[in-house]
Each structure stands twice: as C-alpha cells, then as structure tokens.
Length: 204
Ligand SMILES: [Zn+2]
Image (cartoon, rainbow, N blue to C red; front, top):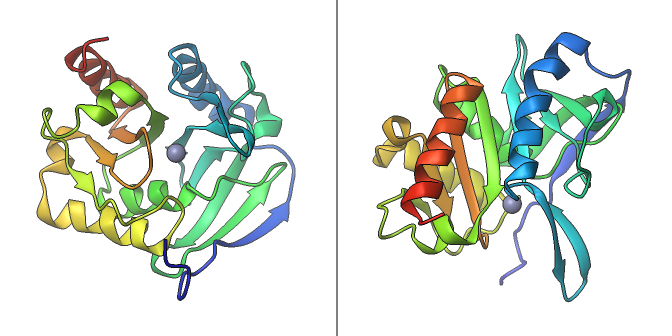
C-alpha cells in the first residue's frame, strides 16, 4: 500500500461527560443486537486482538458513535459513546467530545449522514459471508484500493451515493476493508432490517 500522501486521521477530541441517557437508550440496544450476531466483536490478527464494527445515531448536531476499542465488550454504557460534532471527511478530520474517543471509521458514518439526510442510523459491521457475496448480491462496492479510515474511503463512499443505488439499497460493502459492510436507515429498525435481509441472502 502506498503511504505517501496519506492523510492520517485528524481527531480533535475534547474529553467530556457522557451523553444523555435518552440518546444512549436509543442506540445501545442496537449495538447489543450487532454484538450478539458477531457483527461487532473482536478478531485475532497477527499483530494481536483487534475490535471491529461500530454504530452511530444522528442527533440534532452531528452524531453519536460507539467508542474506539470497544468491540470486545458485550455490554456498553454511556461511558463508551462519543459525540462527533463536526466532520470534514475530505480532510480526514473529525471533531468530537465525550468520555471516549470515536473510531477512525467515524468518517464513513459522517459521509453517509452527509450524503443521505434521511439516514438516522448507520451500522458498520464485519461479516465474511455478506462481504464475500457482495458481487453476487450486487452490493455497491468501494474500491479495493481504499483502506479503512482514509480520505480515499470517504471519497469512495461519496462516489457510491452519486453513482449507485446505495440510497435505495441501504447497504454497501468495502472491497478494501476485509469483511467490512455498512447498512443504514431512517430508523434503527430499518438499518437492522437491511442487515437481516442480507444475512439471509448470504446464507446465514
Ligand atoms: Zn471495519
């Protein structure tokens, strides 16, 4: 992978109190729903154990998202969510507040919220079955050259909204991010229903 010219994730994070309970109550059951299905979790790679997957909810200003390094936890609390108040995906820049830092994959969520104003929930899951079947299922696909957490991934996600029927499908796959898929919807139920539909179509 070329590293020259790659803009590192520019996070301006301000430590702050946890988010209000009513917002946590809206997102947390769905994070649990993902964890129970292995869509969020932890995996062994040569470098060690890494968590994967995250979930976000649009709020009045920006969005709230599960915190970095939380994939291994069966249950999250208000301490595990960050509030992304501003995002500039084309500069790989995110401004956030809260008791924990947001994932560097937050910018993909930011692009979905920016490109699709009705979207209220975004789920980034890892699922080998859906990912491997992406072409057969005709999922919109980001370029294999776009790695996670990069400006290229943000640009590719933006491109899908311009060039594919991703809005209607509510799902896309990340060819350059192994097992990476994203679903979204105007409600949590809708984002989850798209996920369930494709889990079934992938044969699970
Ligand atoms: Zn991922």
